[in-house]
Length: 175
Image (cartoon, rainbow, N blue to C red; front, side, top):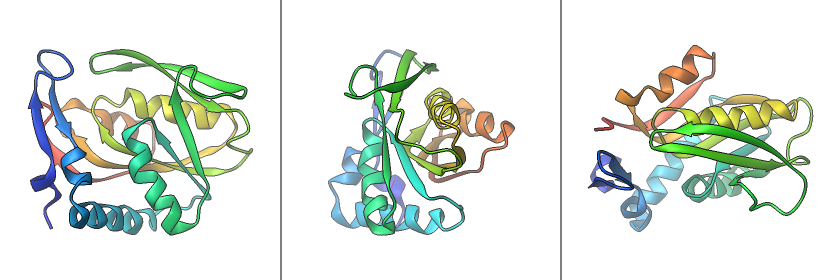
């Protein structure tokens, strides 16, 4: 199955000049979504980890299904002021602005190995922010799995230069 066939591209969203790769069309197709999750589970076997993490919100869709299948704890990395308990916080750059993500301080224990799953990587700012949250809590980043890599925006290259292991299911140009 070619998962690219299930991704909708929307020009000038969320702002002019951005070509948005929409995964909602993949998620609404039960065969494509099942295949996608199966592929992430298969790729996850290449990593040594004891917990999964994902970035709000589309990463949650994929990571929660993988967490269920693998019987691994799932950590929520959320937008600022969305978590009720004490948090670690990291600011980062996006392709189209800046943002902050947070994680509960009790989510990752010292020496936990965390696999980070997200729907898409563009410039790598969100992924880099997620890795910083894991490191702040003295955990280790096992690596990353993305459904989509916007290869010409350099996010995977940024992570690889920092010696992170990175896998993805689909390559698309970002523009």
